[in-house]
Length: 153
Image (tube, rainbow, N blue to C red; front, side):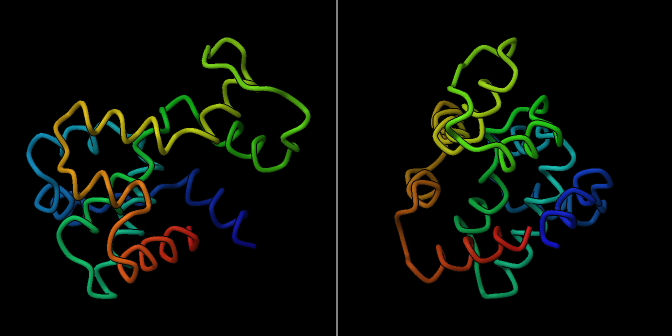
């Protein structure tokens, strides 16, 4: 049921103006354009995750991490490729960084989007605290909130 809900959210992302403005206030000025450049489905998902983390008591860098945790997924990594990576076993194909390789490229994105996102944020001047949170380091309670919120879709 979760995968069906995620697919529907992907097809019809909800980006309320108030949430987009809230994200712009939460993110540092140098990182806000990166969030704004994400695909609408990924921004919608990130906003749901961040709002859930906020309801648990999260603030500051953990909210930034919630908003930017999927920044390594390019817009071209659409619903078809996301579904493919979940449904097709790893052993069926290898990995490739070239988009023209289709399924192998999608597998590479699926496996490495976290590291690719951290590199992008590092190059944009993200704080060490944010980068550590996105690496799974930092305060355990906040990381648990983030993981739990992300798992809900």
